[in-house]
Length: 532
Image (cartoon, rainbow, N blue to C red; front, side, top):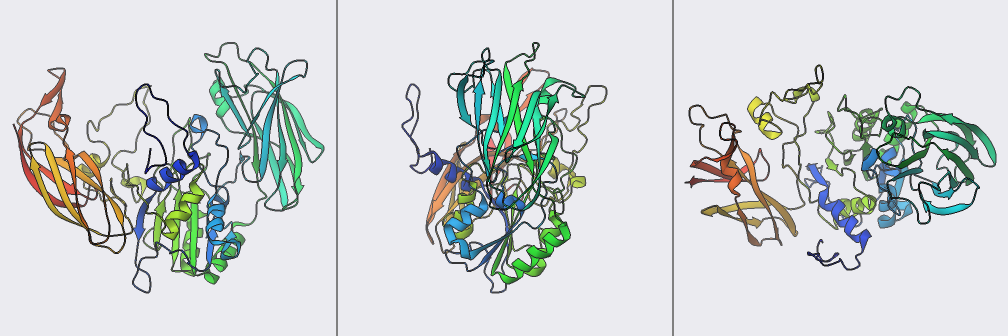
């Protein structure tokens, strides 16, 4: 699959056994996008930190409880999750990494992840155990035939989510539920709540199943002291549901502290460390399935946290744990900004690999990131009377930005590595384009060479076309001082437009410009190509 850690799979051939953790770890770091890596006081970029970076202050609630996956049906349940805190401490040792929460964006109930060890026990109407399954995150989401062995929808009557919780913090912890049915919640041997949840004000069963969780009870717990817990659930079946499914969750919220105190503690930890790493994130409340985002701002006081840490330590790396663009007004103040998306189960280990320089961040932006939501060329996506007109036509994504003439924070295709590249040659034979480049840095690296095609002026009566479009890309690898070439075959579709009158794609000959680039806004070499 990637660099020998997985097998080649072809038609009619089953894959051999793979090291799933190794694949997940490599996929994560290949997807990380290094947005910024500015020189520090000694003139060198802060990243990579190197294998012995000294003391590191790791800051942010998402460093301890990272968002590894998207919300709703984008969620799957891996056998384990490695947080940034676990990844860095495994790489550097406990003593080298100090942790501070800083500013927790999770002010609402969320998945039962950090410190929870839970399983689901399925029973029939007589109380006989039918089967069991692990429930990472405290969530049962079984749709169709996706049930534990021995369990069917006809026999399943109740589920008990049970196990232990080891709190990372002392204080009053809040517990809640999500789903339809009857519940009984027990923590540390005490029944805290029992009751039922119906459709209520939900507009449909989907909203009730996947919508906002409901707070049920609180308990004062001590950090490091495990407690037993149980959420018993009697299933409610919906006769009109198009597909049989079970969705029920135990949700949780840590004790809430004064954000100003937390930020001050984080800034002091950063001041005492050689390097500070701040992990900021979105939450399921602002970025998930089933609703549109209303803002690109990071939730909570995370922007204030970044500014405080940057002021305390100029060697600050900000790690952005989000699935789509967020506003980062502090981006030019931080020494480095690294985008990890939702990195999956090995995200913390992959982050340690990249921060310490064992591996390069390999991703490039698949979207344009605005400095402010107001700068985006299209922001109104609310239907009127059930109708949404796409008035932008073919000008979507980076094409819309180029047409508007607005400069984004980071353009489509942007992404840095740990070495430098010189684009030296560009030639074409028909639609076959070859780019020669050289690694001018001091370490091996990978470069994503992007080819954009700029069309000739539109003929009278023809629809307007974007100024350029991505027509192909290729990955180059080379050691320090080495030269290499990549070849890209431009597809025929790149020379076509949709002809409404003809009812199909129509070829458009003419003189095109090929641009070999590092991003949509960073062309390095150009040549003219005549398409007949």
